[in-house]
Length: 288
Picture 1 (cartoon, rainbow, N blue to C red):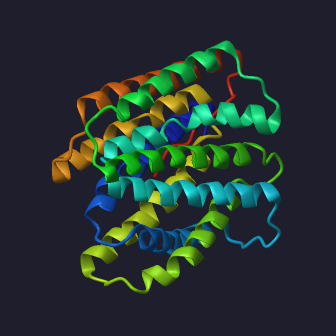
Picture 2 (tube, rainbow, N blue to C red):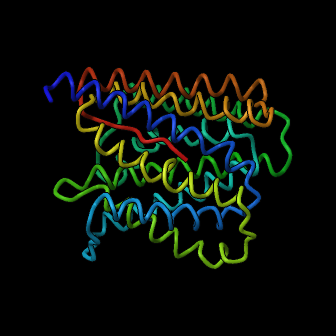
């Protein structure tokens, strides 16, 4: 296949990735299982999917892979918990702030000094964060927002660790994360009631929403510029609350909607500016 054909295929895979990632919100809302059970069940199935894809099990884990796996598990669990406590829109938009934490952690861990555009983006994003907390929230909604922010931080750790694996296979980080998630969640999973609807939901989450989506992402990102991947993956935070609204009628508050516009606008604008300077600088990962 020629370069243009590979690019079109990669764009399609990225759009499909965003679509699959966006489906987690309403499914996590409607399944009756607790967060650790969801994490365990989804991770067990995703582990099988990744083992089939990678065709091997690497026992030589590096520090970057271990740290990235911890970030991956943290992002998954915190996002599930946040979605259970606050609106799906709040959970996904607050997690979508992860690129700004990549900038902050990158300066602390890698010594990469933020540029002026980074500071401006951070200011806009933090303004958006305050708006999310300006709506009338229950105590659960407040803690859900906090967990969603922490999920974005955990996602940033995963992104930094995957970026640092120059000579390794980044997909191994996701595999290790799924193994850890399966081990953590298994005791809680065994206490759940296995009904046909719950088994159907957890199977979909494991095979498609996490397993195949991350495989698609790992293939597509090699052939699409960072800025284009950022714009395509913006479909996830847009579609996630839409599916929840259509499924259960849940809507975010007015201030949260304004905050979400600020967050998406700041992240997208920063990606565009970054692409002009260094086309392959950053490839934000969303998903929950």
